[in-house]
Length: 306
Figure 1 (tube, rainbow, N blue to C red):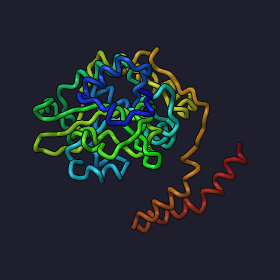
Figure 2 (cartoon, helix red, strand yellow; figure 1 turned 45 degrees about the vertical axis):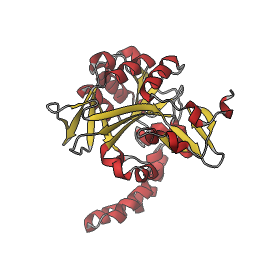
Figure 3 (cartoon, rainbow, N blue to C red; figure 1 turned 180 degrees about the vertical axis):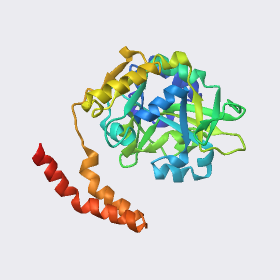
Figure 4 (cartoon, rainbow, N blue to C red; figure 1 turned 90 degrees about the horizontal axis):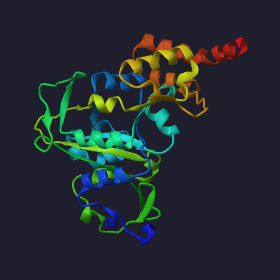
């Protein structure tokens, strides 16, 4: 049957995790990418943990509201599954300066990582509490899959770059975790592959840490963001830091995108204005006002000097 003729119900797996692992093995794309700041990436490699936050921290407020009763117990780690770089992901998740990094799991590395998750650790005051691990099945449940994007206008669902028809009784087949893999269509540019962890422990945590084996770390790929290589000296220093943390030099590359978004400079006036309105401290407000009034003249002088 033509995929476009199928309903989403017909392609939903009964055994999600097994089906996903089989799909990864057969999938052409081996790009499972996590866009983040340089410091965050270095912390991941240095500590050998992936840090995962509760749903309360998500930027999709609709999704947070949808799962409000379980937000404190549900943790999501997101990756972009795409064959190419994703410009919005660079600037939304690795920093407004366009100077972050992308951590890429190959197909084999992703399979090994998913199959290795049998325990996780609480994070308290930015420190991993390794003395009290949470055990799979006993203390937490885990599921992983590509996110489905619901197009309400055209009554379709996009899943792994294919469209399927929706049907009214879709909720009849949605189990506890399925619901955490459905988002609204405007988010489809993220091509998200996510790991969902449900904390069954009575204690609530803000963050959890998933351990990463040394054998997985040495096979990770690192890409520097489009605007990170402007300062060659800084670029060299950061690259060496990643090598020192266990990344092979051949697995480090720079973005192929020749772009300069310059988002911070383009939004400085608005940012300062927002800071001024948020702060009641008189001296701080005075400084913000001064910066705002003089910013344009500083820019003009800077351009004239060039």
